Length: 95
Image (cartoon, rainbow, N blue to C red; front, side):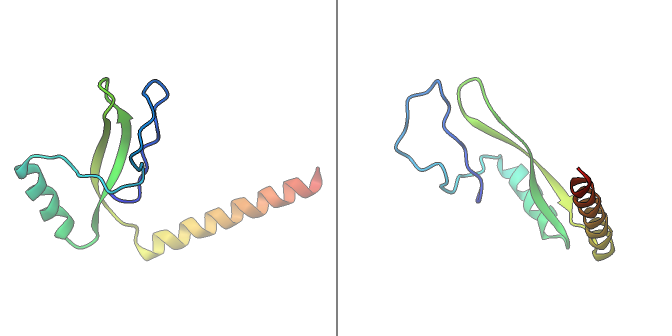
């Protein structure tokens, strides 16, 4: 797993290891082949859905295979975000 950081837990003693290091994804061979097959398809990628700590103190990540947005969907999202920003900006001016 790259680009994620697992912060230090307060009840554990501090470690000298880097919290931003690359971490292995521990899965079974069958699961790994299924995930690599799905990500080889066009437009599919692995996305972390949920990150949590196990009772033993390990960081667990629930992952999912997702399809990216199409160009027209991105444009609609950008328009909606811009409209919301403009409304917020005008509301702040009136206060």
